[in-house]
Image (cartoon, rainbow, N blue to C red; front, side):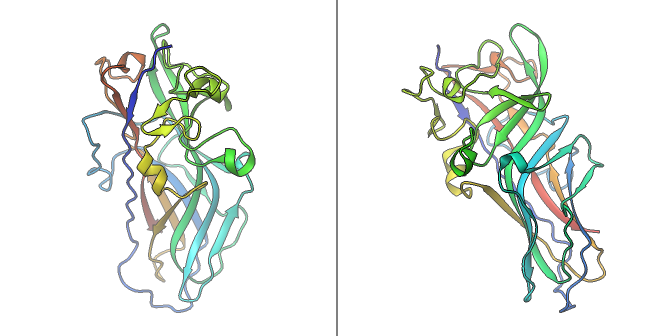
Length: 296
């Protein structure tokens, strides 16, 4: 089996748009009735300035899934944190499905937000999933559901996934691991994990993914990302200002326009085995969503 070395680019952009710049004037806080999550597939002003380290071909996925372990509002001025949900494991995580920019999912999960003052929302993420095009060698162009794990269920609950793992989903079933030793000829997924992420298939000699051993990490991301990312559950926090009279719904918007980016060495505009080069490593990236928070 040939060892096709890959270089991995990661652009992490967490941009928070504050709902209002003035200080909160009501010490008792305001009543927030709902917290919504949406995904935007079109470019907005916040995402225009997002640039990769090299010139890459950009693709916007046709659908996007987010699997969350927990969501909480961070209280201020004496208001306790308000936990909206906290799931025990990956299998019980809250999975939100987006196919257009009009869908807004409530994050309340049957909870009621206490009246008070809140400064931020904190989210724990298990995985992100998207549908993108793949140019296979023998079957033409295919649509694939790529899932990228940001958290480590192997460590926390005896699961199968390390952070950075990439898998393929068919009809809601995970069928195997991607971007390891089974890249050619069609970038098909393989299983079990050890067979895909080690040279010999039995774990004696693991692939090196941008300075990360395949034993402990998948191909997504680089060393700096995972050193700085909360472990074992990936966590992100977005600040906002809650001001009386500015609405009762918080909207967390994930912009994924052009989030799949790759070096199109074949020139066909579609990512595939033809873009892989053992001599000159191929660059690709799944850009983390640009997050904006608004109050309606």
